[in-house]
Amino acid sequence: MAHDLVLKGGRVTDPSQGMDAVTDVAFASGRVAAVGPGLRGAVEQDCAGLIVTPGLIDLHTHVYWGGTSLGVEVDAYARQSAVTTCVDTGSAGPGNFPGFRAHVIEKSRARVLVYLHVSFAGIYAFSSTIMVGESHDMRLMAAREAVAVAEANRDCIIGIKVRVGRNASGPSGIAPLDVALDVAEASGLPLMVHIDEPPPTYADVVARLRKGDVLTHCFRPFPNAPCHADGRVREAVLEARARGVLFDVGHGMGSFSWDTARKMVAAGFWPDTVSSDVHAMCIHGPAWDLLRTMTKFMALGMSLPDVVASATVKAAEAVRRPELGTLAVGAAGDASVIALEDRAIDLEDVRGENVHFAQRLTAKGMVIGGVWDA
View (tube, helix red, strand yellow):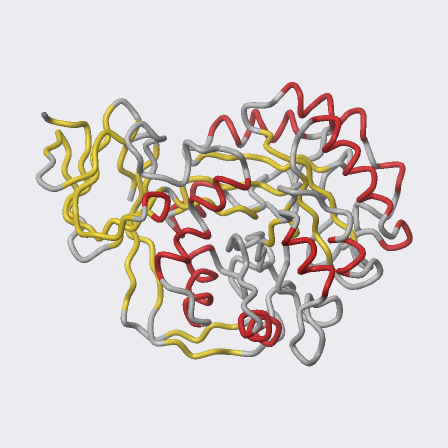
């Protein structure tokens, strides 16, 4: 039987099925059609020596290009990092979401899913020259409007976003989080929460989160790190994980520290999901993209299957889209083709510390909706 497209002879690494073997992956009618040796297709793409994974999901991106100062162009970014699904985390709020949908989401080849910001205008003043935390002014917390927009756009809005911290919420403190929790409960959606420097504290934030909610920037540096100076993980963090709160990397320009990461890994606390928090101010460093962030976790000792899981099946679970993050027959026809190159790289964190690593993950192509895109 001839399929529409077959990826031939790659190392197929699909943690959702416990698969890590050299074989073929076939697509037909926009979906995964078969996995196994000897498959034939109308189009055959040679993947020998490369790694084929379920379509990579970057759980923390900012891709409202042109509508916000921090947005990057989604399809260019997707090709740069072999990402088939970009999850935009709060670039737009209910006041500007219609433009995001019409001008970016519906026109992009890569899939865009959204955590809608509880702030009416989303993240509206984030640049190298103007920096105004959108959660400073409680008048912008648009609970009713956010619920209405989320209800009307269930096909692409998968959660609610809020940012708190000295920079993001300033005098409002933790109050925007309480509003966002009400919105998440009313809409039946999970919440993603950004934290930066205190107040509020890391412990105060995670203590409010529910099963399935996401704490992003989970390995951020001091102050407001998830661990004590001696490396002990904060009790509130352990309690949050025990009740099902998810911990996401969200590297960005200020939220990944080698020092914090080493301490958390030594304590046996790995992140649930690895994401880039790519935006206009970190796409040229220190975050770069998802594959660079995944490489950093390999440098910390994470295996290739585990780091792939963190950006496929685990990310799909976080956004509650079981048809993503897997190469199971009948799943969405997305795949990422990447290479693990024996080419040394210096991996910088947000504090300027560099770690030299002998390998790097690089993008070689992707399949979206059963169609090859290099």
